[in-house]
Image 1 (cartoon, rainbow, N blue to C red):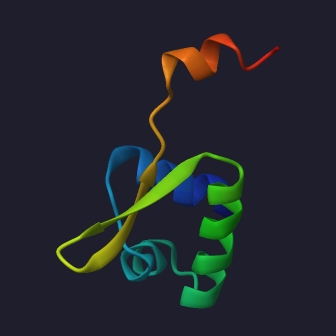
Image 2: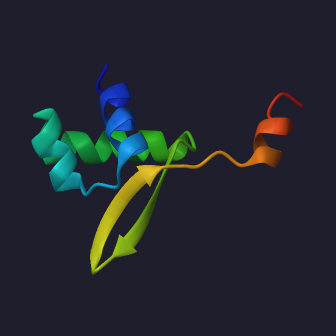
Length: 70
């Protein structure tokens, strides 16, 4: 699945939209759409580095894990 492919990349390293597109063979609009979906699910986050927007997998917060089933 394409979402899992992107998530696996971002679990190991930070990447830009262009880098993800190059590694997955997807086009940039498709990657952006999937990144927004993962962002809305709380699985990834974005940050600015050296003037570029990069994406990474969101680190799990212990408190968040503890209360996720409540």
